[in-house]
Image (cartoon, rainbow, N blue to C red; front, side, top):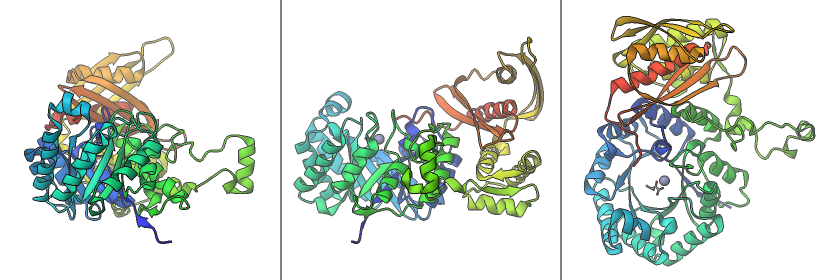
Length: 512
Ligand code: KIV
Ligand code: ZN
């Protein structure tokens, strides 16, 4: 039986970015978008162009970089938003405008303060405005999961008539359960007279832990696009996880009449990249991409797997990319091999200087560590993405002292705008002392929202990767630093975040 295509719409860069503190810079968005293109997602929702000039620039940069996936911008049902979305996606090989307005009684009355008829009229106008920019227009009735079905039918019929090519039904607050969500799709597709003129899409939030299950129920009832994010990132409890939806469809072809074009071996590398850039660590027992997803602990299970893998495994670890964690370069690799490997990973450094600096960092690491993995390269590049123009603060040297019975001390020298400055501090531990010494030089006054440390690969010679999330004047940034010495990694991560704050840009915390 030939299968219909299920469109995978990835919204990691938009809804995923609405996870508290998961703000990404323009360069980081482009890096993730390139990896999503490698993963072969059909549509990349790159952001919300009208949110700020920085958001506009990020969507535009993704539109310029991506050739094989459609690039989409979200827009409220307001003409100026739609104009910005339309302009931002203009460089894309294929561009989509996704416009939305709420249709639930509670949102219309309490948030929009609009009558249902006004909402319907605005939805139609929005789709018509969007069609002036592109033939590929998606409409979402926000909070459809709590909207009245008769009203939804009227709105959806009207927007399809006005030119919407995809109608996306969001369960904005994750209120539905699979059987009911499937029935919503069945009923909408039966009752909207021009239902066959658009692609039906589902966008589920995970407040009850049902986002993936609800998305699959929608697919069984006619949805042919699923909106999802890597690692299930997203507003509050997140969105349906791309990896869960895609693998359920792949593992159970007996149940689903659809197939995707996703290269599933890119799932784990994409998950790692998103986790590294956003600072959102993946829980070990997370389906598909968690570190334990293919680990067998009990003796009975281990015995079974050794005798016949399928006794306890429904998919192969390498099919989702677990074994792409291979040594990629070593001590003797040259600049060309390094450059080629970065290109293979979809990484483009903006200048020759950045490439040279990254290569020098790689050589330094290879001296200490011998075997360099893809993840190590991503970590090096995360630091070198801070171009010299925006590297206002640079670590020149550091000395840490930690001894039983004594307060840990740090002595730090920084280059601040090219001028060397020195400070010393004590702290509850050497990391605390190092960050205090830096802060006493910089005096940023930024609030620290997160400090997390992770081993990039296995073994005690692994690089520690630190994420520091800072907030200042309403802006949130994530700084990354990696080093085989985790105190140095912490100092680098803190400086990386300070450089991002210093570089400015109009992007505030991207919560709608
Ligand atoms: O959850 C939601 O309703 C959304 C829409 C903008 C599609 O993210
Ligand atoms: Zn959403």
